[in-house]
Length: 201
Image 1 (cartoon, rainbow, N blue to C red):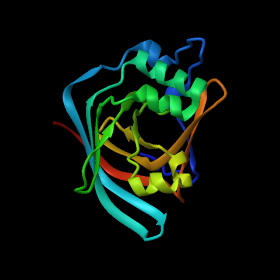
Image 2 (tube, rainbow, N blue to C red; image 1 turned 60 degrees about the vertical axis):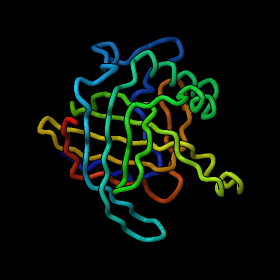
Image 3 (cartoon, one colour; image 1 turned 90 degrees about the vertical axis):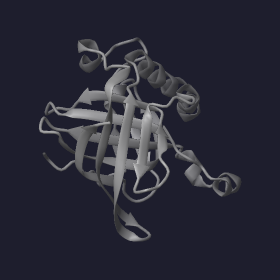
Image 4 (cartoon, helix red, strand yellow; image 1 turned 120 degrees about the vertical axis):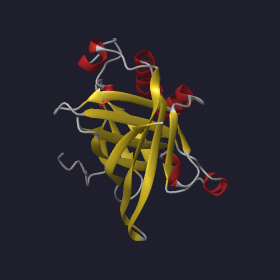
């Protein structure tokens, strides 16, 4: 599996390759992701932070998927972002819970949207989006970090059950034209996800 580590702060989202007029990309036309998984999917691996104030930090993560966001909901979320920006997307996500992301032994953070697509090499791509927890101190100060209200995760799995990916703990998302969205990282680099394996919960 090739290295997908991206040193830039912008990533493209596959799920937004659709327009307000209702065009659906091939991965949505071919089949629909299940709303509820047959078994809970649990992905574990190593998480590496690079370039922060503490240098390189290596730890572990667990991504648990209880259910997938239906295709119609993905379209609704995409259109909300296009028409109303991040605030509209936050409102559209609401309190939906599709699973959790846990770093080391910390308290798990809810995943609000998660979907599957296929990358250019035919590998399974899982994309997850979560509302970022914002502390009282951060909210009171009104810092620039408030413009980065999401946590964004990408996991790529091959046919042998091995994978890698990345996570942006504090992300800003915005629509670019009709078919692409930018994801901007608050900080130097996103975190790298390595040695990912899957098991059924």
